[in-house]
Length: 464
Image (cartoon, rainbow, N blue to C red; front, top):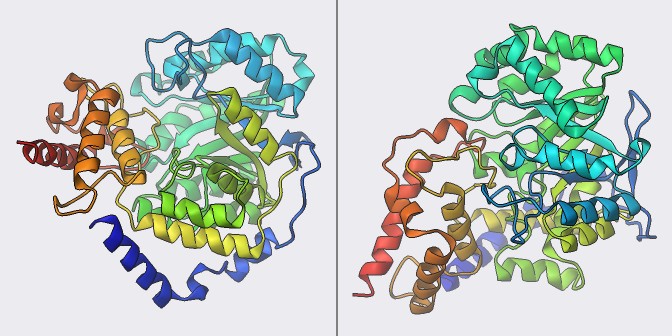
């Protein structure tokens, strides 16, 4: 449908749903509260129950480190990471209260730990907390020896004697080899790795132990059932104002964050938050949706709304944000210095925005790059990113009768060639499915590639 029809339907649907559908539940209001607090300029900190650590509410995510070509190392495989720029980010972050840095052996094509080690080595050890993961996804790393080798290499790359926060990485992924309890058992239980990590925590090599979770609720529940043995210090979950109640609408394999958060809260396990902006989609949404937020708080960015929302939950320990540019670092620090919790009215507005966003058919790709490299060279995240960007900007039309069809067609096709080289576009996907098992969001990637390619061909044919 064109935007005019979409707006008409949205208005009608909003009217029929009534205010009740957009009002926070009693449970949500009880968790968050409704009072606002004005910023005074100092970072908000939360306390870890098991250790007393004071953790900055804003955590520095190390998946999108800056490159010498002024982009993100997450998307640019062969581009050099800008160590000088990264050092400046870390210095500014430390100076303004951030003390939690989250990395992994696989981030930035395996370069993140090394470069963060260089950046943090310059900082007194007591001023930062380092989090990393045992990212033994591939079967070649399921053996005890290989997993321990990966674990010990993290100490070497980060140039530390102690890991403050160690995670079992991405348990319960939504499809293929990552989604089964069998895989969880192979990665961490049968090889004795979990027992090994528990022993190293007891020795003080690891100060806190937890896990990050995607998708399969059976594995989340399985891991939490081990809490009496493991005494999880924290758990990392995907949470934002869309995923709170609508995760399954975005991706049927996901679990609503409301459930995940509640299960952690009842056990007094702090929650660490990933994907606060839902892969960037909550930072730049449709203009008419953004206008709803701007009308309420004209000075605030769209991203700031999403970050304030998460900071409103008292059991959230830290919110991870991948910050490629210094502007990101400064804005996010400002948002949490200190956090201004959302009011009940603002929570209702965000739920209304979430419902509006769900009516638009974007691809739920977060740009995590786990699907890459494609054996046939297809730039999967780049294609999805361009498609979603065009949706957000109103440059996707389904009919040549749409009012802005010519403009939208031109913007989509020209932007597509700029964003994705011709040899890496969707028409080169052969549907092998090698990518599907690696997608934490459970996206049927070949089907989406086929759909986007058909759309591109329809645009090209209409130009003849």
